[in-house]
Length: 419
Image: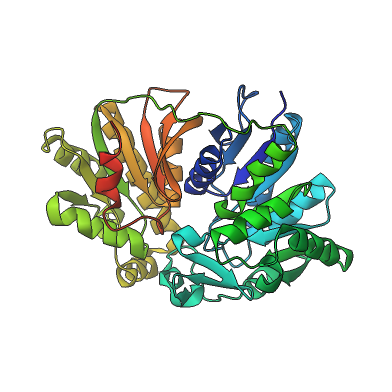
């Protein structure tokens, strides 16, 4: 059977977020790490997770097109380009360049852009993105070490990234329902708009937007807007009204938390863990001086006698900026990612089989270092973060958490949620 929905995510935690959303809505979903080598059986949706958010635009476009071509070969009926609910990318992209390239490849001339995820505090109103009660530009994202977001007006962020005309569908339209949204999309496309930012301030808004996307070849957004897509396939009879997809294997063994994100949420989670449990801090300055931080971290882990361990490079924004000024933003990021990935691999080799990874770039580095190719989707820990299980390697349970997601006690909650 052909796939119903083919998805491309610009980072690994985003891919897991989307896969968890679709799975919770009754779609059998597999997350692929990179473009699969061959067909994927017994699934309704495939999410191809890339590590393209901070790549040069040409690289991000090439990788995204390769993913799209594989999905088209599987006969997908609809395609979804997933990016972060904080709409972050580099100044040159990559949301605009990738969306434009995907539309051109598909021969389509219009799509929407909706990063809203109210359940996690992301809303869009009058084209402005809010994180909780703050504008994006006033939230912790303004200090992101790789993709700082200093403008909350999404039209102003997206328009310089694309040659397509960017427009806006306001909440006054969205609040009137899916038929009105679909009509507004048709009017925008007829007027020459290529990408329309769509307001959303509630889950009901997201479902209405998703329902309005029936027949739209390409949809782009955060995982929230995908909430309404499975219902479209149910109405057409291609997806069962109900389906039990809740099974998840028991994976026994020790656990570890690897935190590379410096977001406000992850910093709070690290601090909460350290109040009651030990942790190993990656000293970035010593790392850059050539110290064997991986060896030190693994040696320290052996002294914890099988208890869950936290190994973290999480730091305050001012500390990160000081190190970046001395060694360069990209160089520091790559070194930290590689070190955390090496530590994760060492822990797995020593018997760890439950991993919580905090941060999109960190998750991508770890998953690639472990050589994983595909993940099945398990129970949701908190909105946007399910447990996953490797399906092409030794059994590993992984929770790939966006740096911005999760409550203060997320780490404890994640480890307690597995049998």
